[in-house]
Length: 191
Ligand code: NI
Image 1 (spheres, helix red, strand yellow):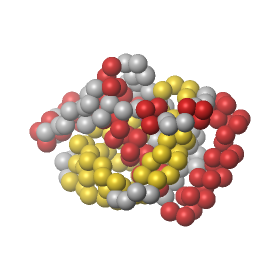
Image 2 (cartoon, protein in one colour; image 1 turned 30 degrees about the vertical axis):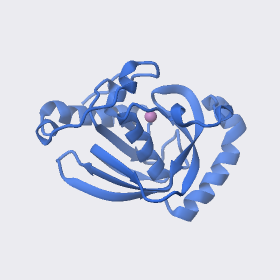
Image 3 (cartoon, helix red, strand yellow; image 1 turned 90 degrees about the vertical axis):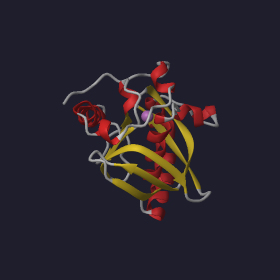
């Protein structure tokens, strides 16, 4: 298990759609080690999730976990989830504007519209199939990670560039308003 270097914006690996894994590949020591390393790398960087292409491995694997995250203290907890070959489908048209950041986009945050209710179909690290509904900020986190596997970054979805800010200036000028709105949203949708 190891913390791997994280690719940052501008590296082509982040723009390359990742390829699906066969169940045979998923069971291989190489991919099982990659999954362990994704968890270590996400936790070391205090990320809410990380996709394999962020550590220079363009395969459809991502991990998500939120447990009192210091980068995103308003995010409800998400148990450690390993998603392999995920397929994400919006359930309806309800959207929420979330201020996002990304381990591959250092020191930048911005507002992104995300679906509130999504269906996520994926394999876990043992190859078991899951079919789940995610809501709220949790749904937003899964959309962010699935975007990575399609070569997309949150900055692609920022429709109002004036919302872009450094983390310091988010804290100073945006945090209070955003956290108040998003805390009310989380209370309403429950996640
Ligand atoms: Ni990201």
